[in-house]
Image: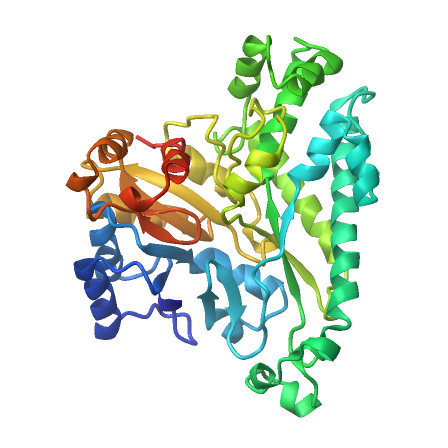
Length: 442
């Protein structure tokens, strides 16, 4: 399914050799999509290595996932891994971070932070009764701080319930689905004579892959600016427009979209994003995982950007019912941010060491203008930020639209979608549209 290239040795020195070069060269020449390549890089990576990766990217065949050592290794150390273990990490599946031989993760633990947000905005009392959780609504808040505290309380409730359910299942897993063969490969399991599912591994931690972070930042920013700072609308007026799916309130929706938001590099959005990131970390740090270990946060999303987006009502950031969500730490597609440097600047303002479970960002650089040197500079600049997983495409909206009309002209146009790459012309119309609605940076 996957294999990992690059990275560093036990002393932290970048790794690159002829085998690495051969794997990248064959993948590029043969247009290989599977197995998926994960390329670890850092600001100290050899130029030859970065160029070898980027040759395919600037040709429009994006089949590589970039993994930023400068952000990931400190995050893993903060989770309690030794520096040697952290330097020897691998990436499995789509973006599963793990240190070799000492741990295992279930990569499907996605947690939809937007669900309690939706319940609080739209008064979904019947659904609350169905799921057995009561979320406070925003309507009576008299200040933005009250709105934020309601959001935080609801989010804590969701994460605590997720933790409760996970522990209930995890504590009996060894009785119904033990992993003896796998456990024999993990440090401490043989010594302890315990299966991985029975707290046998050196690290028995969990990762909660959180979903909806950019949309929540933008939604809270819109409420803060429009209702409490500018006082252009009352909170009741604003929430009422959201509940109507913005019908008859298009100007208000445009006002919401124009507010500061995640990825624009502004001090306001960066401060709120870091506050949320810090609070999510604090909540999970007080919990014990299903297997007796810690819980680490991640900002990751797979195909749920569509599936869950289609099932979620309108949000205060200007998003309408059923529209796509932002993926991981990728800025919302509603903002149409022109400069990729603003995104990097935003990612430099949040503490990546708190994100021990990985995060993903989608970036599309313009085809025809992006050279090997530009790609190299972008990667080295992003290495100094909280950008961990990077899904990088090099194309243009015009090229993709032309590929829709004339697929025979683009047999080898490969795009990075969400945890996987695919030929653009082979994607369904819905997935082609998801790619087309992303930010195309100048």
